[in-house]
Image 1 (tube, rainbow, N blue to C red):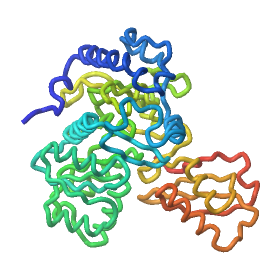
Image 2 (cartoon, one colour; image 1 turned 45 degrees about the vertical axis):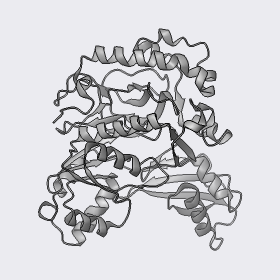
Image 3 (tube, rainbow, N blue to C red; image 1 turned 30 degrees about the vertical axis):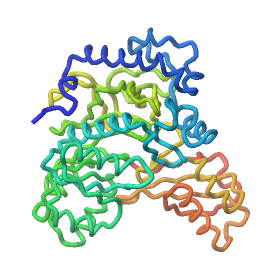
Image 4 (cartoon, one colour; image 1 turned 180 degrees about the horizontal axis):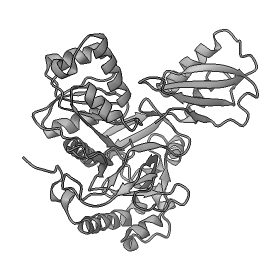
Amino acid sequence: MQRYWKGDIEAADPRRRDRRNFELLRAFGTELPGRSPFYGNRLQGVDFAEIDSWDALADLPVVEKPEILADQAANSPYGSMIGCHPDEIVRQYIGPGPQTTYWTAADEKIAVDDGAWAFWTNGFRPSDTVDITIMYHWVIAGTLMDDACRAIGCATIPGGIGMNEQHLNVWRWSNVSAVFAFPTFLDQLGDAASEAGLDPANDFELRVITVSGEQREADAKQRMSEFWGGAAIREFYGGSEVPFIASESEDGSGDMHINPDLIVEVVDPETMKPVPEGSPGVVVATDPRRRAYPMVRYFTGDITAGLTHGVGSSGRTTPRIGRILGRHGDIPRVKGLFVVPGQVGDGLSEIGVFETFQLVVTRPGHQDELTIRVETVDPEASGLADRLSAAVKVATRLTADVELVAVGTLRDQPTIDDRRQL
């Protein structure tokens, strides 16, 4: 059986891998401005033949999520970033924003292979039966992960979200040995198992569980492993723009190895230049392969504990990033989904004019909770909070409590108040 999903490049001399990736980037970037109007404007005057080092790459501008949202809003569904003819698109995912993630057939194969790499690196193997406990519609999640696990050879169950008791019953019925779940949902399943009097060590055959999509506490993986009968808890990291950026090795060393086919930096969010090794910074990812939805220096907004180099305990030589500590900027991730303030405002506007509001994010137990504080001239208005909550759910797909407050209450308050202790 193969050791590394992507082959020897994962354990190659880092200089060889960098040379290969920068060669790909130069070829990719040279034609990119002619294919993508967005980059044609963004990269005016850039000679990609000179992008041959990390320092040269760091001189390029970053691309941020609000720019992508605005670009697509001006020309839905693809915006001006598209790098191919629209007829070549074979897959659209529609995420919060709204934001379209789109692929050609070749791009989709790349994404599935990257997903298989992430799960394989975590320790998933052909003998596993896998429950994918994440949304299978609209967003770039369940279907992509399902394809990735099946590419490995796993027997995959499209479990989806919710239905705690059903998941636990299926784990016993189908001898599920591997699971993907958001950390908070895995904890919900743990509560359900305890309430049902189940003993994970004896009632299940769980071998490896991958968590991703949310921030987690520093000790969460150890706590989860102990509860789930010693199952290995692994994680990977990515997003809709660049799906599989880094993945923890099967030996559980902790940090996540960078996808060898990506070019990843950790930068100071003020200067957009790389930070010293081991220092916290924001993950910036470049994919020199995808045509339809190209990403050159995508500023994820996610702050990692740091980037380290050297040979990992699994023998991989790819750099590693630490735990995701939080987000820079004003787009928090709640229950695994980004919450765009402008999108919340659109939902509120369906009911009335509410110019001032605040998003309060908490995690009192195992589940993120979102409260939206809205200024109104009549905080006691009957039924208004419920109507606003329903409108926000349509706009964001998230259930939020709405708290009505008097005009002036939120003066000088931040738009985002993230109170989670992560």
